[in-house]
Length: 183
Image 1 (cartoon, rainbow, N blue to C red):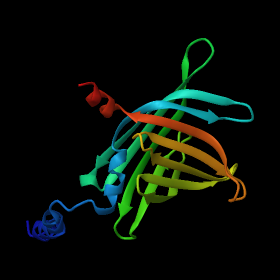
Image 2: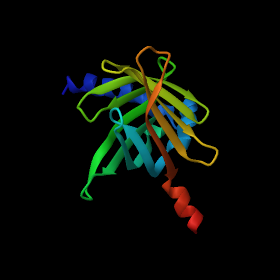
Image 3: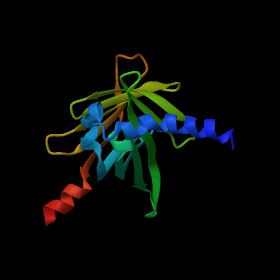
């Protein structure tokens, strides 16, 4: 019994700051509020010289931890000859603002089983993130909210860091906005 008292005291001391925090404002994460929701649309991906694939895409951005973190998941499918569809885009990421470093952080999970800790810049209704890719050089994605309220994203690669080639583009509409406009 005596050994439980220090353990309980340590537990309570460690949780006191959590209760004292209350509902703190998400601060820098407010810049990403526009992403939250479900989005649908179409995109194109270049898979090699002359191999462009078109498909439908659904992206979901969900706020977590009182607005301090976002999860992003995307699924894109393209029709293949014969009428079936195949997955051509399968993405999952966590995005948060690291209070210790004062920076935004992004961790992506790739369909090949690898993860990427990406560099990210957050601006007014815009994010740019990227990472080194051994086969392509540098990869970057730019996501922006258009004046029409659409999610527009392009993916580019650069072998020299100066000349960029687009390999991916999608434009999505927020599903909730469409449903609300119908009522």
